[in-house]
View (tube, rainbow, N blue to C red):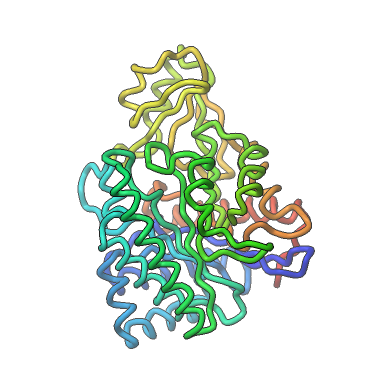
Amino acid sequence: MRFRHRDGSIVHLGYCATVHPAGELDELIAGLDDCAGPVRAALDVPVLGVGLWLPHQLADRLANSPASLSKLRRSLQRNRLEVVTLNGTPHSHFTDKIVGTKLYCPDWTDPERLRYTLDLVDVLAELLPADASYGSISTVPLAWRVPWSKARNRAAREAFDRVEQHLARTETRTGRTIRLAVETEPGCVLEMVGQAAAWLDRYSSPYGGTSRIGLGLDACHLAVQFEEPADVFQMLWRAGVDVVKGQLSVAPTLVDPSDAAARYVLSQLGTPKYLRQVREWGGPGVDDVAQAYELSGHAAWRMHTHLPAHSAAPDGLSVTTGVLDDCLTRLVGGGHPLTHHLESEVYTWPRGRHSLVKRITKELAWLRGRLTDLGLDEVH
């Protein structure tokens, strides 16, 4: 969906296609035909944004096969879909029962992460609508926090410098601006926005320009860390770091950890396939909810699992809708939008076709209402 901001620019709203992952091109196209297209029709909008996830083998194929890219483009056109953003965080189509920290591998010290990201840049430059101001690609917060060292940090810096050079060459060659959006995530090297702002300061653009590398602001991750949006946005402004992309979902909160029934409800959310990091207000955290017994239990807990923005709080818990609303207001509610890319990110929903279409439609309709309340006009 597209919205006209009061400054005349276009804000794009879509959803992340990791909710129907695809390892091969035909599987990706089937997801567009069976899910994304019907969601667009149900919302009755002229175009719907879908944030594609391309595993590394598929990214390589699309970057190097014009025929494959044309086949994908025809599917997007047939379903009246647009691609302004890609999810470049997971590198592979994981079939493991437990993924854990492998989600962040290869990290930015590994040349394979660079190669994969450059492929995504080349693909997005070809798929990006002609009237989009830029394209964005999400990526990992450098790496899982251990092991980390000055040498590994230098390797990541060198890789990012090469990405920045490739982004500049791509813009010169195609006339399309592609930007890298670095997420923060609990347990990673860049765990909090302050850490990311300090690391990304090198790529900030002076004199109010637009940087090619900036922050991917995930409202769920921010909330899990108990970061206050007012402080976060002030910090980014001072550092001159751009928000390239906003990812929209909420996190569950356990206000009273002594409530055994509510603790059980929390432990059942999400999927054990991925880490479900827990943070305690004002204190430490653990890398998975199964380790929550190590926490003091004297203050509220929040867990890293993405819940729909429109969802009601599970029994005994609350959700961080207030944090999401605050982020949205600061991102697009002012005189100028801080980002033009907004994406619903919920990847743990049931995979049944009809239930998935219905859930995504409801989620995007809820977000559409929020953006309208902020004064943005839907483009029909």
